[in-house]
Image: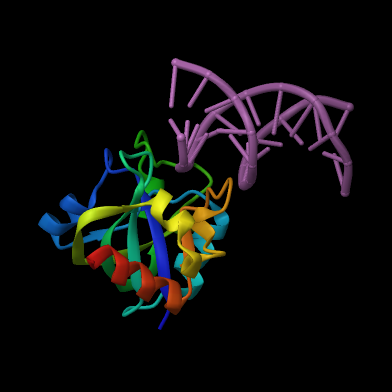
Length: 152
DNA sequence: GCCAACGTTGGC
DNA sequence: GCCAACGTTGGC
């Protein structure tokens, strides 16, 4: 089982939206490295942190579970859609998505600032300068520690 | 709103 | 294949 951190701007889709909807598809990822994680490595049962980016404050808002492994992102085929990409086709899809399920919303967002100063989270990708990757692998230790301090 | 860091595109 | 220009991300 693997652990992940997945970013989204809450103005577009937040942990509250996921809590209401229970499950959703994680479409619109347009970065090859992130695509590869979803297409090749994510498996049902994997756990992920829901990270609010460009938010007040930015940070980890809750937990979700992967419930469907990588499959073609059909939004890329939709002419005129904001996620449309002409180089992707149903025969040869460029982009992939997964489905996620709501698990937990933290009472408060664990801010990035708190992640940065925690010695037990040293080396975590999201705290590194210029870390723009929207899907990041996470060690089991970092995942468990974040949940522990977010609940306390 | 600013801007640094990064990924992608396209001319050559 | 290089690299400048451009667009995007995302913290602050």
